[in-house]
Amino acid sequence: MNLILCEAHEVGAGGLVILEDGRGAHVRGVLRATPGDTVRIGIIDGPKGQGEILAIDGTRVDLRCRFDSRAPDRPTVDLLLAVPRPKVLKRLWAQLAALGVGRIILTNASRVERPYFDTHVLETTTYRPLLIEGLQQAGDTRLPLVSIHRQFRILIEDELTAASHDELRLVAHPDGGRSAIACASESDHRRALLAIGPEGGWNPFELDLLRQRGFETIGLGSRILRTDTACIALLAMLHEVSRRRGDSDRTR
Amino acid sequence: MNLILCEAHEVGAGGLVILEDGRGAHVRGVLRATPGDTVRIGIIDGPKGQGEILAIDGTRVDLRCRFDSRAPDRPTVDLLLAVPRPKVLKRLWAQLAALGVGRIILTNASRVERPYFDTHVLETTTYRPLLIEGLQQAGDTRLPLVSIHRQFRILIEDELTAASHDELRLVAHPDGGRSAIACASESDHRRALLAIGPEGGWNPFELDLLRQRGFETIGLGSRILRTDTACIALLAMLHEVSRRRGDSDRTR
Image (cartoon, rainbow over all chains, first blue to last red; front, side, top):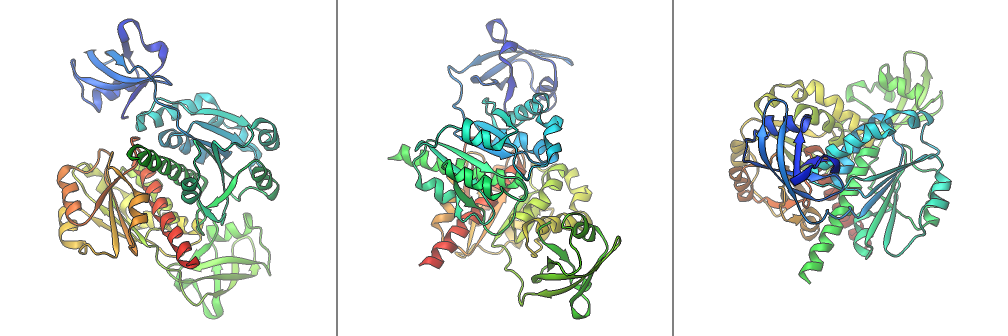
């Protein structure tokens, strides 16, 4: 936990925050903080700041917090993901939030098995704490926006905004040819939307529909990776390319 | 399982291979193969090929296999990794093999906790099947070479080969500055060695020793990632840069 996150309603008058759950235990047991120390704290979807420890005992930690004037920007990469196996998705939530994703758009696809939609891994009460865990790891406050779509065609044809020059759209496909790094480096997009299919890949109809909506096919070489490995690999690459571009903008 | 792997000693006269364990169950239950069908099969650290199904029943699958003349090349990226928490390492083995790593050099570091060395996750009988699982996912046969080192200083000072122009050496460090993609793209190395520290990072002495041995510091931006997420992200980037370079070499 590199940043403690709290809900906006937990912040009382004068910036007072009381931690009584695992976050309090973390301050006591891992940070071994004592009154007068400060810890990094942020408000979910709000600003980050510092909390000064006023009091600490076996059950609660009282903090007086000051927050920055504004919240961090929302990550500039979104993910369109065919619902993976529940076990894989459960592991993935925290990692997606840690890597930084603006929106997580979960969709059905012909090779997604029906029972995948009926698991608790797709319930807010399961995934929200996992996303927060990832944010606390990465030091961010921006909770990814999650939506779940049972009809791929309606999602892509009706609900997805029209392709725009501003948004780079990439679809990962085995032996998909071009590299994500090359595609992202050559474009001057502000945002990216990355589509990753089910184990076994998108079917030809789905791939065609995605291409019609402006998605360019990318691959990761000849090795076939698990969904979660591919997600992490590709999200990290897109972030890294945009970080490099930010660096070169600043030095211009 | 995108490639079935067998041990060299399992291949009998005329290329006969008999599968009686989970691999046989995979051929029956997932591939739903019948006599006359062919499946992709490879020999660990040997060539890949095709196996024709001769007979199949509830307990065994008999294959007649033909293998390519040579084994795939060993991956050109090696990993020097401070031993992570057992739970994290257990998850990581298959993913490392799937991404492709020539050598996995596990080391102690000041922020590695002692008990991490005394777990079954570091035993060959635990990690070898997990590595094979990753190879079967990725479709490779090259088992990463694993070594475990309890003394960081002896490893780096005495056992690591001298830095050479042929090998790009990178050490990941929070806020480490340069991007792995930039470093790898600018170098004309044949191999890369990537060092990833414990949660909490390398200490200043360790970082200094690595730099003396030719490691350049890289970072992944301001977000702090878990060891396994950082491993996957950085290995994928190094592979992708070398794939892009391979592509441009071929088109020259």
